[in-house]
Amino acid sequence: MGINLENISIGEIKTGKLNKITDVPGVKVGHATIKENNIQTGVTAIFPHDGDIFNEKLLASSVVINGFGKTAGLVQLEELGLIEAPIMLTNTMSVGDVLSGTTKYLISKYKKIGNEMAAPNILVCECNDGVINDMRAMAIKDFHAKEAIESAGSDFEEGSVGAGTGMITMSLKGGIGSSSRVINIDSSNYTIGSLVLSNFGRIKDLKINGRKIGKELYNAHKNTEVEREKGSIIIIIGTDIPLSNIQLKRVAKRAGVALSNVGSIIGHGSGDISIAFSTANKIHDDNMHSMKFISDKFINDVFRATIDCVEESVLSALIHGESVKLKSGKTIYSLQDSLKKSNLKL
Image (cartoon, rainbow, N blue to C red; front, side):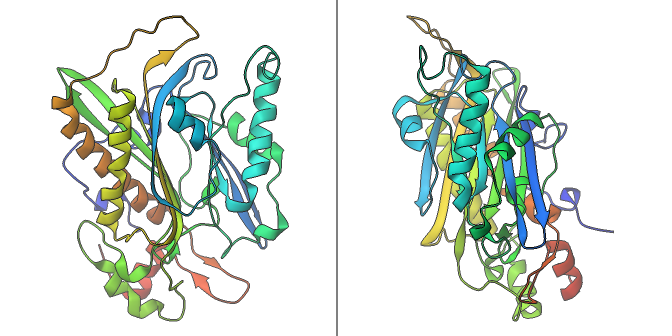
């Protein structure tokens, strides 16, 4: 019997129904996946809400934990603090194609874009999947962005799927992972969810629930692991808690604590980027905006739930990963297969 998140207890806060970012009402996720010999890659799309995202923008913020990355759209997000398009994830060399495909999708949906309306700011985030995937083949085309967008729903696959298809985490097979937490603020329940594109770290550093299990796994992987601390992680945090841009930036910063909890040193060559948004206040093209935000006296509860969410999302990416054999003959093991190989249990 394989491990699952029920074998692992991260924190004391209860999860949402699906234990995914889509437990936040309105959030949807979709994938486009390519698995063809040496092409192991894809696209993942996150819709921050199920309404008109371009005309009903959301407050958002971002934190660059370590900036070895090629993400598009962060400059305007930092300047204006708004999300107005689906958030897209892919591999490093496909950012341009996914940006083009998402732009074409929005142009087809909004006939005034580029004429009477401004061009959309589209966030396209990336990690390097070049160990498993032949990135030089440039297999991602602009239509894969549309495919991911149109497949978006409230439930979705994790692990080696979409943008996570070719990713490696802690020298094991990584990819897409997600989790959620439900907290009570001023007698109302709210949900915090996260989704990660996980592609960082080395096996010796892996920690699960505080246990330094990576050191126990290492001996079985001396000839198979990706040794160097490099890679990246993209962290998307969504919530229906009414938060200001400043509060969202503070929430996004806490993702770094979660990375430390699983063993990351946030290495030199890692592009570690966290983006947080709230669905509570929708921004229309009005002359005046009226918004509500929680008091900071509740913010520690939000921080704690966020840290638990992101930590569990990384572990979920590992748990749902699938072993893959490279052309060189090397195997990137899943956490499941690594534990079997090492005769270890969580």
